[in-house]
Length: 309
Image 1 (spheres, rainbow, N blue to C red):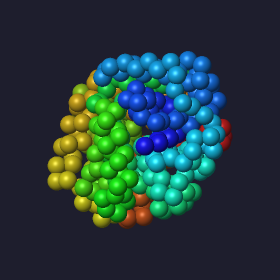
Image 2 (tube, rainbow, N blue to C red):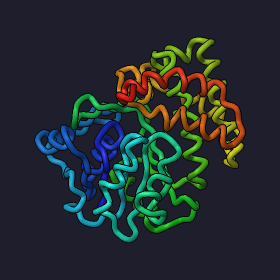
Image 3 (cartoon, one colour):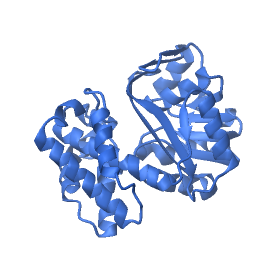
Image 4 (cartoon, one colour):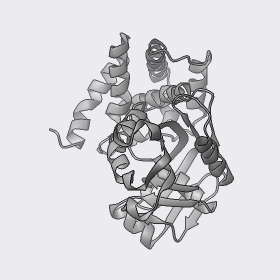
């Protein structure tokens, strides 16, 4: 199975590295300093599940040199999904499946808009990792996994084959019964973690142990759950407890990627996460006052990071 990984950051670098380590036919579609690093130094992943050092990996900035892919993993930030899809267009075959692995809920629509509905699938992943330097990834928390599926929840040969390939490379991958519910369950977790972490500017181990910010997190989580329910998503009955348990299970130094970008003054997924909760809530007629407060409080810095003000 020929797999293209678009992006080699915390997500793409980790999962692409595991695929390459396992002998899969995988090519990184990257550019700039990341491409140069992969071509000259290879890929290094420091991981709590065992380190990887691959002196040589397949990497290019030209999808036309790859051939037709069976699967494309989109591993860029949410606001880069459409551009990433355009960059991969030349590697698309008639039945190529495109899996989004970034945070947020709107990537499948972006994929469909650029490449066509027949290529768009649902996807999510779990891990806490970040870029130390181009071509050097550090994985510090969470046992990594990928969940994927057709948007209509129908079984397909291409999703099954991709899961088998991922599992063969020691990546935990599976097809959930309802990919929409699975994506929303992940969104409950990441939107809450990102919002509270970005506002408090401290790791999860600090704010979750304090009653005031912990109570904020619980209110934030219930707001996202209300939005999901209003949009017809059937969450698990223990969704609230499950998400809070996931937060409590994180290593004390854990931070969300959105939080790290905010702290470093970089463009972030603020609009795709906190902004999305506000937008989707308004569309569904659900008030999200805490998310509105967090989103609006962080918006000036986001505009500065994007050089819009």
